[in-house]
Length: 189
Image: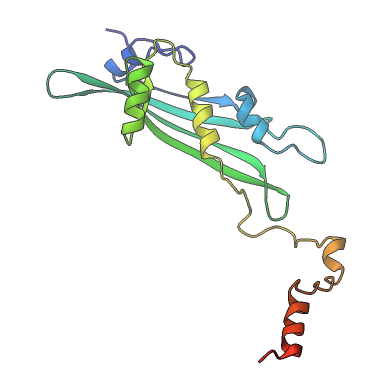
């Protein structure tokens, strides 16, 4: 019996899990719009730095038998990409490896998924017959982006702005300093 072909853009998650199937591939980063927008544009050319970059991904379906005859539908994902981001120290490009590994439990119905997701340590999604894997992978990579991208050691020393070169202005007197002086001078004892 020949293995069934699965479309990553319209994945029947239940059938995929029942077969214990797996898929893997690469997509051009430019096809993942939201993730590509996070990448830094090349300053010299003004072009996007996503040209030639790819997102690699793997997914595997699993049907876990439970006591009582029911089964759980699981989808395990692994994705990765290298993105040019802006270093938050030196403001120069820093190529950052972004990896996402996640397993999802699929259940029937949005309400059931929302309730289980709130009560469970697992990621729970509503079962669908047409899951767009590219959208799911993109979401996971966006969540895996570093909050503060930076070089381990910045390639060039940080330059100081003109405001940093100016001496600090004198600190204004404390508003109650005058009152304290009056109190000391009046010696009401």
